Image 1 (tube, helix red, strand yellow):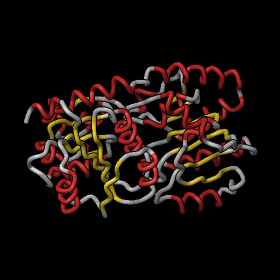
Image 2: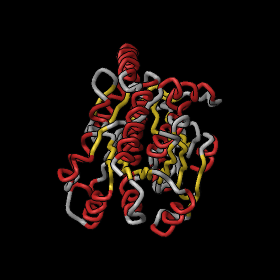
Image 3: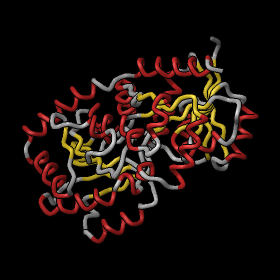
Length: 350
């Protein structure tokens, strides 16, 4: 087979988990695949360009723009990331094979509604549905009808690359606790601020970093002021290279309402950081008592983080467990092979 041309479609203009996965995947396949990254313009553009990836910019992901992108790019395969991109792409072409790649499991997939019905119809158009964890199709109300199309592939993780990026950054500030992710309801940054407010009562010199942008930023700033913890918490906004913040913290907190895979948790483990997270989505398969803890209530988070920060032996034990746990997820070569095999299988069905 010659070099394939694959059009990756993503809805977001910012850089986060799904975008990280797409860029890592594209980089791992450069010798075999010509990849074009299609998305709205925004902070993602600089990241895509820095990785030497061709970026086709559109105003938004809708049928009109995707049809134009298809005409201009003439891809062999469309690799549509997440539900909305997949649905739009399914309405934009009848000829080009579509792979739908799901990175999360939002609550609406669990019940009958307009979104779940529309997505369900779109599934008939996909040659393959790639998911990052079992929970996505298990929770999708119509998932049982499309099990034969589904492949669970996790996320592409290159531990050595992640560590190199952290070493290349210049941030030297050290932190006790880190939140890394979009400041949006699914990531639950409001709960994180509540947790930190309780911890500061016990640890007045606590140092905390929040890395990410999103709709909840103003609300978070107000809560930080109300709690009088401005001297403890720094909002760093979007960072092109967030890995240095993971390297420089003691603990990573992931209080998500839902997650598909939970890539940020693996990134924390990569640097030997205990991960304190909610038991949702893929996080249940990543975090255990050897490398962190899964917590349901705010008080559980507070208690566990406090113990880690005040008991150095306990912290060292969890940190060692985190490093051991991370090795399990270092899969970039295997992952790349699965994607290439999927592309070849899809084209072979035409």
